Length: 130
Image 1 (cartoon, one colour):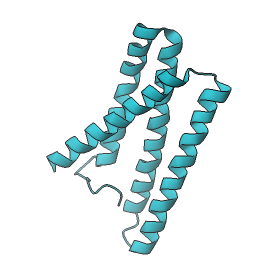
Image 2 (image 1 turned 180 degrees about the vertical axis):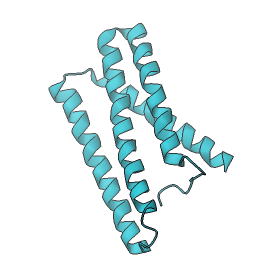
Image 3 (image 1 turned 30 degrees about the horizontal axis):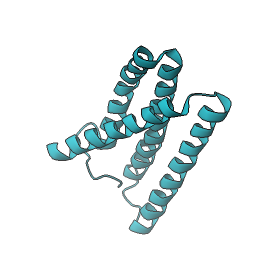
């Protein structure tokens, strides 16, 4: 429904989420080595925020695949709803990270951006393999 990069066994979006999950410890250790433990935790949180947002996409994609009888109108509504859910989750988790946990903003956002680049790289690789 969302990406069109479904393969036998593992979907393209799930492959991307796994790539982001693999990036989390590497990014946290790198942040810790270069800027200290606080930056490492902030980078890890940023990657985990991106991972949570991606997990919502995978969840909605799997929901749409389980219902092949749904028409285009219903799938479009699900697509819009998933986008809104992902945006609300992103903003909410960033507020928690910055406001409640008092994480450093720059390392946290760098972790988020790194995870999004991992998303882009894995999605591009998946698309080229099909």
